Structures are given as structure tokens and as C-alpha cells.
Image (cartoon, rainbow, N blue to C red; front, side, top):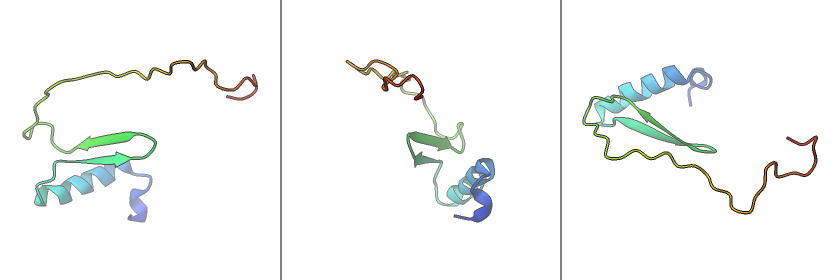
Length: 72
């Protein structure tokens, strides 16, 4: 990765989209602790099929997980 991209996500996605446009790529998926979808052009062949807001259900787990009141 280019060192100048590390802390400049906006510049990174703009450069990636510019590169992707030459190759027919309209977006990128990044996986870290979760998934991030970066779409380059929302008006280019994009159609919403469905939209779901999924909440995490943790059966049998009380929050906080630790019984130590000083642990967050």
C-alpha cells in the first residue's frame, strides 16, 4: 500500500475507483473486524433489490460480558 494512503481513506478510494473504472470495477469490499463496501458510482447500473437492518442477537449473553465493573 502506498504510505500516503494509510491515513487518507478518501484519497485511497478515489484512486482505487479511478483505477477500477479502466477495468470495469465499480466498487470494493474491505474486510477487517467487519465488512466495508465502497461503491464508486451509485448511478452506474445500481438497483436496490432489498434492504435489511440486521441486529445481533446474543442469546444467553448478558452485557457487560465481564463481571469486573472496572473492565469495559
